[in-house]
Structures are given as C-alpha cells and as structure tokens.
Length: 231
Ligand code: SAH
View 1 (spheres, protein in one colour):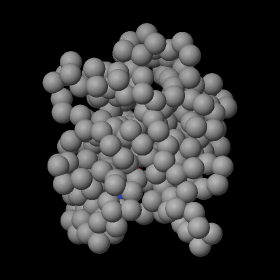
View 2 (tube, helix red, strand yellow):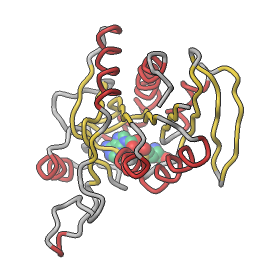
View 3 (cartoon, rainbow, N blue to C red):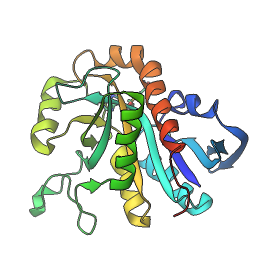
C-alpha cells in the first residue's frame, strides 16, 4: 500500500478523482481514502495544515494501513530565487526551521536522538528524476524547510535561507519525514511553488494554490504508476 498525503483538500482532490475502488475510512477526526491507481493500492488523505497534523496522518497510515512508501504532494513558498510559481521541487533533505534548543549548545533544527536534517529515499528520488525526463518537466531538488509558520516576510525568508540553505519552505514535510524515519518507511516530498514567501505570499498563495497543487498531484500519480509496491 502506498500512502499519499497532502495538507489541504485542494492538494488531494486532484488525486482522489483519478482513483478507482474508492473507500473512505474515518479514523480520529480525519478521512482516509483507499483506492487503486494503475494497479497500485493507495491510501490518500489530507492531514490539515502543520507539523502535528501531518505527523498524526503519517502515523495512522503506517499503523492502520501498513504503508510501505509515503509520498507527500503539495505547495510551498520559494526561497531559492531560481524557483518560480508553478515550478516543482522535491526534497533531498528536510529540516524543522522552527526547532530551537540552541540554549543547550545544539544547532538550530536539531533534536537529540532525532537529528536535524532528514534525508529522503534515493530510490524514490531517482524515480522522480526519470518521471521528469519522460514528461519533459523541469524538476528542482534541494532542502525543504518546515515550520508551523506561513512565511510571508523577506527577512524571515532570508533567515531560513542562511541558516538552513533551504530552497523552499512549507509546513508539513519534515514532520512526515520524522515519522517515516521512525518507522523506516521510504518517503518522498514533492512541492509545487505557490508563492515566493515574501510580502505578496498571501495573495499569490490564494491565486495559485489550486493550479500548483494540481501540478504536484499529476506528477505524483505519474510516479505511482512506476512504483513497485513490494517492500
Ligand atoms: N490559506 C490557508 C492557509 C494556508 S497555510 C487557510 O486560510 O486555511 C500554507 C500551506 O501551504 C501549508 O500547508 C504549507 O505547507 C504551504 N505553504 C505554501 N507557501 C508557504 C509559505 N510561504 N510558508 C509556509 N508554508 C507555505
């Protein structure tokens, strides 16, 4: 079973409309949709926004649906100047930019016995590169920084860039990575840029959420069709 998570309904509805054999399971206060795509069994859910919600959803997918891979699809703010609205980027590494226990001598983002940067699965990243080549789509890669803040401020954006060498910022990826690291599930995080994390981010986000979310979802489904579901 392949798990696919988005944060918001706009990020998962383009996936759900393409599945067959849809069944809905309510667990806690959230809905998990099982179905099939190109012969693969998938479970899809939107977690709601933020790290805690994303961690709960990823954990339920592991415990209840026994997923052997987890893919995240959604939108993000661009930090790297080369990224424009609608561009796709996948995470090679993710970090929690809002974790700060530096008072004890730890680096920013670091949690003892957990670490700071979470590395994504090289095999899934290779499949993403192949998918991009087949579709002739530009696919960026780099560091995605996650925190429970919508970044819409040039100074804050610069700070995240300088401290973590981040290319994009969002609010769920590193939480999903942390859960997958805990349960040793290979995972992949894809984002389509919805805004530049600057003063206009709120307006841009509202304008481009649906179109960017669809670009990410389309790419994720192309990847699903290439996946071997055996562990
Ligand atoms: N408009 C929504 C809130 C969206 S929060 C509401 O009112 O309910 C932003 C969402 O998109 C998060 O899920 C986050 O992962 C992603 N995101 C896009 N741009 C972002 C940015 N500049 N900073 C942080 N997260 C961003």
